[in-house]
Image (tube, rainbow, N blue to C red; front, side, top):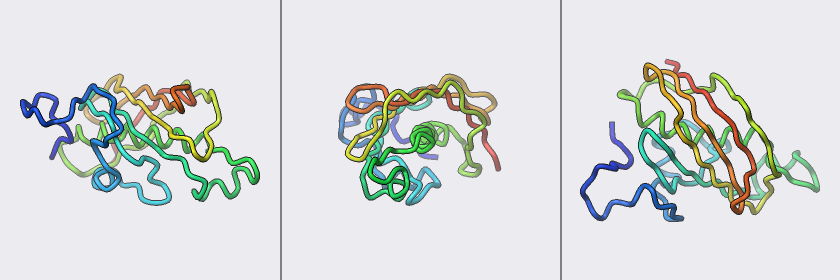
Length: 166
């Protein structure tokens, strides 16, 4: 298995995993090699920070032409909260998937706790999602703390628990 970023690398041209940058560490094409999601359900555009096994930051550019805005809500488009939570989970899924020794299996939700929605997310917003690994057990279960911000203001936060299924 290939690790996306080796933080122990002595290669000076490797990106600094701690510095927040708008340059992607993983592009959407590279994400499609890691995550099973596809349009219209791939909700991450790029990864801009990654510390393997610890923390990851992903970007979702919210655009008006996304299918859910046709009905949520006409004349007042708001990104559904469940899709914000799913987007945060997809970012966290990159961390968990990279920790697997084999490519078989799929991480799915085992729990969603303490989720709070603090502000609306609308077309034109850029959702910056930070996900930190809290714990992992037997490489089959993991819990993460996730935050989604727009313009530096908290939009959504919560704890996401995952389970590996075959």
